[in-house]
Length: 143
Image 1: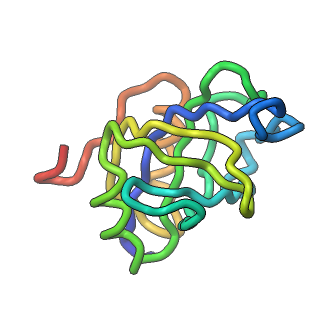
Image 2: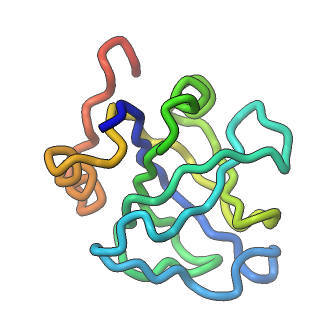
């Protein structure tokens, strides 16, 4: 297992009228990492992007233009971890892309240490936050 970082997000999908998705995202709790958008981090110049798949959402259906959803993403590439730590701290805004199209925006709520693949000891913590539990503990020395 490779050390990495997980992020808790509040995510808004753009409506079709805003150039966003035409269909809702449907994601069951067993669908971990099936949705694999790219993200434009603070300081990147669109359309520059980097990947981090979605561990899970706080509900099964996320509607474009609807209420924000909580999501947890995990950075799968060790060499990208410093970029994410520096450019996606709590409070940062990320832009969600599917290919070249901008489909949403997210605000980072927290960052926490993780592993790729996510271990059985970590998954309940991330799923717990999606269900309304506490935020995972940040890395020592990080806010």
